[in-house]
Image (cartoon, rainbow, N blue to C red; front, side, top):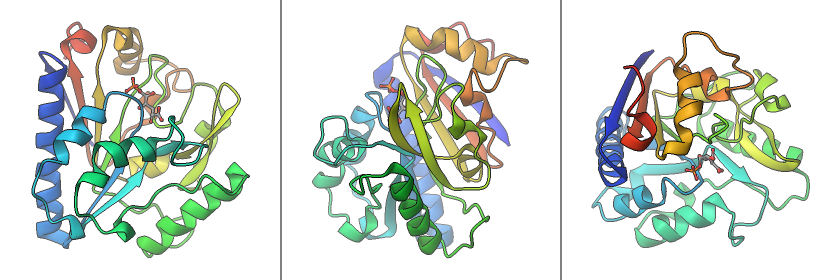
Length: 240
Ligand SMILES: O=C(O)[C@H](O)[C@@H](O)[C@H](O)[C@H](O)COP(=O)(O)O
C-alpha cells in the first residue's frame, strides 16, 4: 500500500484535486483494461465532485458506477446516495443505464438486499464467493466519528471479513455497505474529507496506535493506492 495525504487550501481546491485524481485513474483503467469501475460515497462532501465530473467528456459506455454504501431507502428518498449521485451527475451524462449498478434497497430485508448486491458484483467481476475483486477506484468519505462507508464504530459490520457486502447499522437504521476487506482489495481508494469537525477523528485515524473498532477508517489499508485528500480545515494540523 502507498499512502498519500494531501491538504488542499479549501473545499473548492479539494474537489478539483479529487476530480483530477479520478480522471487520471479513469484514463489509466480504460487504457489498460478497456473499462473503469468506481464505487461512490454518499453524504454531502462529494456532491460538488459529482457535479464537476458530469461536465467532463468521458467514454461513458466504458464507465461502471457502484456505491460503497447506501441507506436502506428507495432511490427517490432524500437520503438516498443513489438519488444524490443521479441528480448531481448520472442523469446529466450519456451513461448506459446498465452501467449504473445501484444498491438494491426495496426487498424489505437488508440482509436479502446485501446478498443480492453481492451476487451482482460477483457476476459483474466474474468472481467466486470468497474472492475479493478489485475496483479501480473506491471513493470514501469519513464521518466525524471516523466511520467510512457504513462501517460505524463498534458495529457487527466491522467483523465481516468473508463477504463483499454486509448490513451496516447507523443508530439502529440499516445500511448496505462494502466490507472493509472488499474496500481493501481496490486498486485505488480515495478519501475526500472536509471540515474542522473531522479533525479529531483524523488525528485518531492517523495515530500510530488507536482502536480500529472505535475509529473504523483505520481499517482501510488497501493493497493498492490510498489517497487522503483533505481541506485545510480538516487537515492543517495533521503531521504529514
Ligand atoms: O452514506 C453516507 O453517508 C456516506 O457514505 C458516509 O460514509 C459519508 O461519506 C460520511 O458520513 C461523510 O459524510 P459527509 O461528506 O456528509 O461529511
